[in-house]
Image 1 (cartoon, one colour):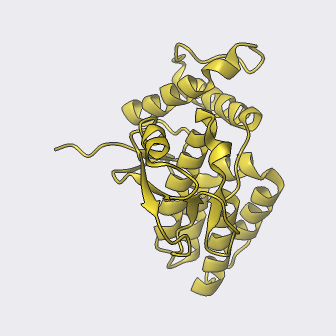
Image 2 (cartoon, one colour):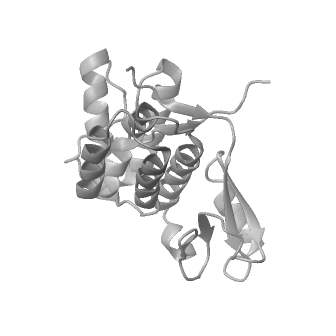
Length: 221
């Protein structure tokens, strides 16, 4: 099966608790990424999977402290996990192969976030019988979605970027200007820029950049 990024045309919706974030702060965050749309939420109990603000996590909702995403890389991480979460949540799972193919797309991100758990999940999916029930597929989908609720870290993002870029380079033999070696001490300052470069490269050349398995592209008019 060929691997390509999933391309969506809907922005990711991030509700925020009005008492924890001003309208001005939300507007500023919303200008950082064109695929992110913030909107005020009066009642944080409405069941959104991610909510920006202070609150007690539930089975359905994960609250994200606004202080945690002041760093643009952390906001980017939240945004890409939300894009992936939304896609994976909506993928129809009628048979084992459907789950296998969906996991095949998101596994690099899952491994970056929680390597041991993601690899164990992959083995479980691989061992499923051909006639696996829809109920068993949904249980495993929920496990993958639960991993996507967890934040990554800059060092793991950098490692994933380099791993995926190296794999891409072996296939294309076409270096992308601006991508730095993981040992380059200036890499932390340019990490977000490099991520954008490889996302754009994936969209432009239909390559697979597993660090961001689901990408937004504005729909052509």
